[in-house]
Length: 80
Image (cartoon, rainbow, N blue to C red; front, side, top):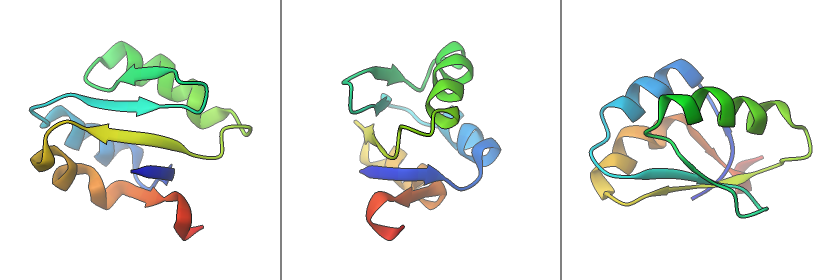
């Protein structure tokens, strides 16, 4: 899903912790961040969220049930 922003970062991270499969954030530069990694969450997402040039990014869940856990925190790029 193409995402513009995440509504509640803390709740999003808590939901990520319950995911069973791989969840990735992919930038337009094709950087792939594995969101299961706490280090990636801290360093990578800080960079993505603080960079005003990054207008949207892709969130990919390899397990459909994981998507159900995090979708309420995602704002689709086409909604803004």
